[in-house]
Structures are given as C-alpha cells and as structure tokens.
Image (cartoon, rainbow, N blue to C red):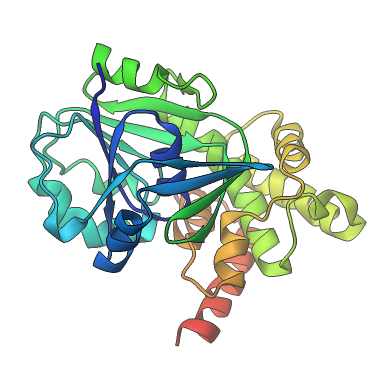
Length: 296
C-alpha cells in the first residue's frame, strides 16, 4: 500500500526527500512558479554521482494546500521560516503526524502549541544541493534520525520510513540527545565554514583553522555536555570533506542563515548555565554581519 506523504518546503532537502521516499509524494511549494515548473517537468530530477532519475512528484503551492488526504507530513523549511507557516500548520488536522527536519534547536519552542497529536523531530545526515527548482544533487548518502517529540509512531509511519532501504530512517530514544548531537556538529562546522567560505574538509587540513575547530568544539561540548565531541566532529568533516555546509552555501548564495538556531542557541544555553561561549558569540556576530551586508 502506498501512503500519501506531503512535504512542506521545496528547497534542497525537500526535493531530496520527495525524490527518495518512494511513496506518493506531494510537494508543497512556497511559490506557484516552482509548482508549475515541477508540473511542466513531470516531477523532479535527483542526481547521484553519474546517475540521474526523474521522479513523479506532484507539486502544489502551500497557499492552495488541502491536507485532508495526507497520511504524513514532513516539514523541511529552514528554522527561521517556520514562523511564516505556523498559521498553516495550525490548520492541519490533528490526526496527521508531522516530522520536523530543521537545524539547531531554536524552533522547538514553537512546536508545543501545535494541535497535532503526533510530532516527530528529525536530523538529516545527507548532503543535498539544489540545482534549480526541479533538480537536486544527492551529494552524500547518510541517514535520517528521528525521535518522538509528542505522541507515538504507529505502524503506518514506520512503514513509510522503511520503504527505501537506500534512504534509511533510524529511530532514536531521546529527541533531546539526538538534537544535541546534531547541534554539536552544526555549531562547529557550519559557522566556521560560512565565515571562511570553505568546504568542511578544509577545517582539518589548515592547521590554524583546525586549532580553532578544536577550541570551538570544546566550548560547544561543554555547553551541550557532549563526550568524545572532537572525534565526532572530525569524523563528520572527513566524511563530508568535499561538501559545503548549508550555512556556507547560504552565505555564498546571499541567503538568510540558521545562525540564530545554531550558534545563537549555544550562546543562550551557555547563559542559562552561567557560562560564556565567546567563540560561538563571535561567530554569531560575524555571520549576522555578513547577512546584514547582503540582505539590506
């Protein structure tokens, strides 16, 4: 049985999940233009290495959305974009489960007021790059981790997430542990690569940048109470050495970043614990300054 899956957000992540879930997918786009382009191209294209495939995906502007026939919704918009769709999310029937895939943790406070009985949080370890409105590059295979924020995951949800073994979903026992583990890597790699304009692997190959990476990792690990933090961050840099982080890509393409939900969250947590996080605070200011230059 094929289930009806909806994806809100048609950026790199939304296109990737739409192309690889192997279910009946409806992509809810921000603009009518993108929805029309996807219809004209008979779906979206997923490029993986030298291979590419066309996937039949329906696209509807979110303003025209009817979620009543949807079995499961995945929200892939950036953390700072959630506020713009909260009114829409509030109108989604409470029996439809939601999975949120955002970086950082600044968005978690917005979820408690939603009416849905089942809310899941997820973290994505895949590399994805949006080429155009209908094309995404799968730059690195990883996995999707998910955990229950509220409610329960029934058989239907588990079946949807098990359909494509090449695009695996793994359940985690504690959503806070999962989010903190992802935040550790994001709060080190993303702001450094965004400010420096380099791929992830460059942080290991330049001795001065590596020294900074080590210091920042210690700072973030202390705030998040993570052990073996440096080994984890280094492993991610090695595994994604040729990739540019999402924040580095956002800065390069002069888009707003998720720095507030990442470094901003670390600084806020440090303050709650009576600590300081000077490197994170500096990087937050640098990235916000870059945004200020090109978004004004």
